[in-house]
Length: 119
Image (cartoon, rainbow, N blue to C red; front, side, top):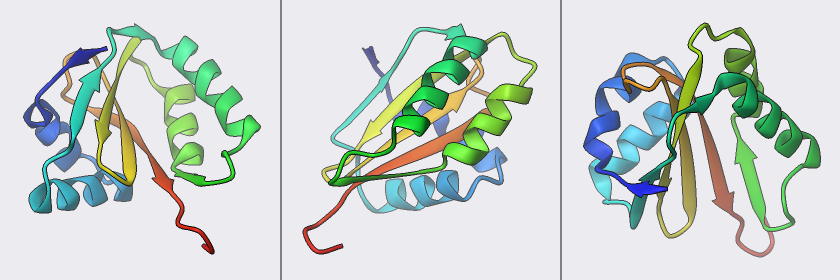
């Protein structure tokens, strides 16, 4: 994965109605991520199959992932041949932002939060 500037995602995040994208935009206004990286473009079908398996496996005991249903529905129906997955990392949360290769359209967002003991 290559290191990126989160600025390249802003237009795509603002243009989508995804509540997790809005959550990420708000978080970026308050705090800089510790790391932002991106994959090379790969097939939408491969992304769908990979994240469908991950959703079926479920979360680890101390991690909660939000956004699988919406993301999987979009990947299944998307007309773009390829996607890029961007990992935006904060101390307690990682956002995975799925875009078209031009980074103009946000296809979906997953939010992986570390759970504090007792939650």
